[in-house]
Length: 325
Image 1 (cartoon, helix red, strand yellow):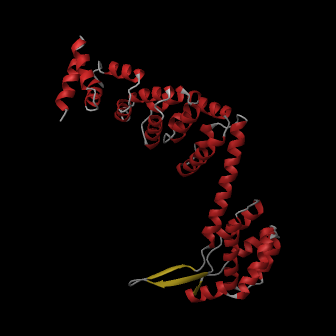
Image 2 (cartoon, one colour; image 1 turned 45 degrees about the horizontal axis):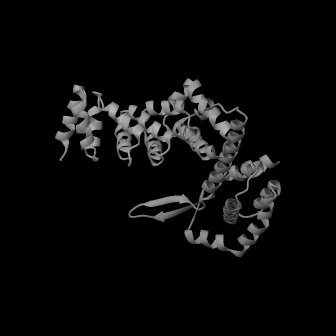
Image 3 (cartoon, helix red, strand yellow; image 1 turned 30 degrees about the vertical axis):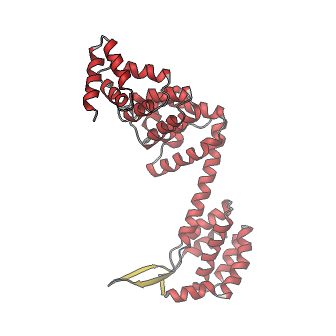
């Protein structure tokens, strides 16, 4: 019976044209307000057979006004169960029964007189995502969440699930986080994630060197850049400093990483030794020498060049000096 009522409620004739004034009057009418007050109780108790029957007794324009305000009530209440979600989904799928025609600059614009469909759809989607998030947390905690299966969908769904994962990650136990991080070294399907959001978040949450190793070898994006910046802000911690040095392997991140290291004051002995070793490299030596030279380490560079027998280091020093203003 309920299914029949819901289907019947969606079966509308061609939309009738009304004015904005008519819509405004019916929405604010005392009769509509009284009906909404009564039917809100039926919504609250999920008695949708009675609700749909009562709605069927209300004439067209007033019925749409009542439906619109009932959906607004649902949005304000923001508490759903499956029955409420089903009813709201039915409202979202209703075809407009009334249209308003607005005069533009030399043209007419026709739009639905009531916009509760989008509100209903948004509330149902929010509820579905909440359920998905809760299920994800449970699966992660019992070791049943396989990220490659859970995340890989069409791109819009994948983006939604990525955002849900990032939002729920802080609530996971250390044990769950470590288990999820381990999947990035055991499941090759995760290599094909379209961005670094989940990898960067798990690297930060777990501190696992293997996850950072993967992150720094992937194409950089806003998420890997942000993680490198976060590490820079914690560079006094040995683990963070180690990963800043490791990030120099990434062609797109190396300049940011080297500048983060050179900008540390005082320069930690570990970082100093690391940068000294880089000065003797053909690939990055010139870049490192220049960054050191322009940040107050010219005397140190000159001393290294004088005592070193490395022609590469000496050329890198000379190149850095010529680039200084």
